[in-house]
Length: 294
Image (cartoon, rainbow, N blue to C red; front, side):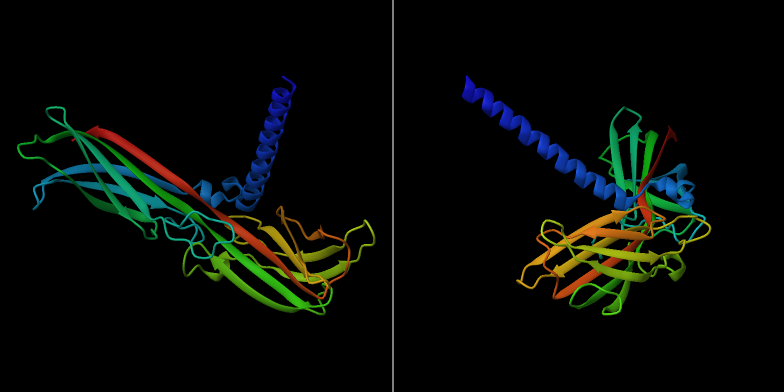
């Protein structure tokens, strides 16, 4: 009985620790992604189906339906069709749109057709033709349900990478910059601005760990969308003994300073890589459906 009781306690502790770990991962991901409500251009963007028209049979003998729909965004920084953002992934395939039409026929049978296009969508009205398989001697459709699925928004990242020898410092660093977006050819005005004004190494001693402190500044991304970027700081230290210590933390919008505590024993550094990233935007799904009679 005692062994069984101990096993149950161990299992409960394992499940509890797993839950905590998943919670921390989820928290980190949500902080990186931010809320769509932070960007009014995303919340006000619309995607909707306007009407369907039955066009009869096409040259293949299938039923042909014209779906008239539209998307609207008030900012070029918030396009439709972007791929869903994955932190630290540079190349993200476009989502585009998916349009499914399900029909019910005169004698009760049901069929459906699907159109998928992986492309960016410009604001405005659109017409998509959906072919629906039709069996021999099948009856005409009398009603439909159409479903539109797409994405809206984009994520832009602007990195400042500082590398050098010895302990971290701004004066001793070589700085490089790069920027990425979840969509190609994003206008420069959609990226956040970022400048680093200080990097300082705070040595520890004994049980007190080493720390790295940073100060930066960043501007609003787009006045129309009124979104402040959030930040991610990553510090990599090469230790004299040959080991490498890494720490990474996410910071909320309007943050301007950070102090990161390095893992491992305080022992200085022979080289460093300090990267601060400003992230702006988000990508969310937009769906719409319509049902009716032909």
